[in-house]
Amino acid sequence: MVTKLTIEYDGTDFAGWACQPGKRTVQQELQRALRTVLGEHGQDGRPLTLAVAGRTDSGVHAWAQVASYAHEAVDPLRLNGLLDEDVAVLAAEPAPPGFDARRDARSRTYCYRVLARRTRSVFERGRAFWWAGELDHGALAECAAALAGRHDFTAFTPSESLHSHFVRDVLRAEWRSQGELLEFWIEADTFLRHMNRVLVGTMLEVAGGRRTVEEFKRLLEGRPRSEAGRTAPAHGLALASVSYPE
Image (cartoon, rainbow, N blue to C red; front, top):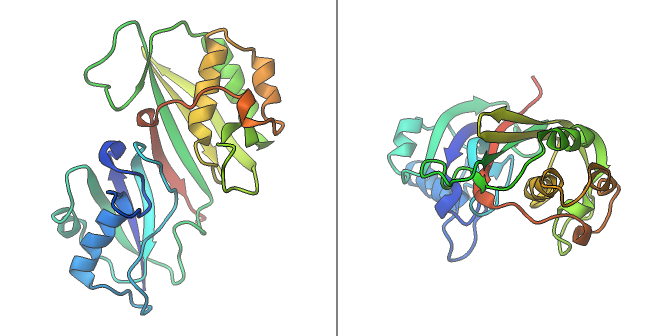
């Protein structure tokens, strides 16, 4: 028996998704709640452990993270009663035998939010990256359009990364504008560490006139990390959704 969880969380006070000694993580909190209800072991006889679709970094949020574990489903209200207010289970449902939230995912979609105005916002603090400089919206759109397809994203992940394969398939990428709030939406098969945040940081440099769209496009040919822009802050990023085969 396998259960699929849909989860949302505010990543501000978490050291990311994955369990880390001495640090508060989303996986640790959820596994503690599940083990309180179901016991220490899954129905496969192994320690009850969550597989996850996207391992978010420290400070990154999730609107619809997906995880799975080998045991029966538990009412989300019961689990949420054991969790702090910055993480909540939205749904817990039986999954097909052998379902794995990470391996079975077809794609992940992320959204990065930018507040583009002269003054900071009290209400978007911790939810959107405040950008007070000039922005060329056309340049942002050109950069996003260049991302669709298969590219080598070596320039957009830390040089000390443990990844050995840097090519990713981007299904769609676009900037959306809602007044002063800009949102960068991107869907891909999988993502490299910090990939979305470096993409945003670099695109903002293009939009601010510090580099050209053509220079940005060349970065998609496997250029070194040192040639790309800064890593945008974590608090603007959220895992929006995960797609699975029907």
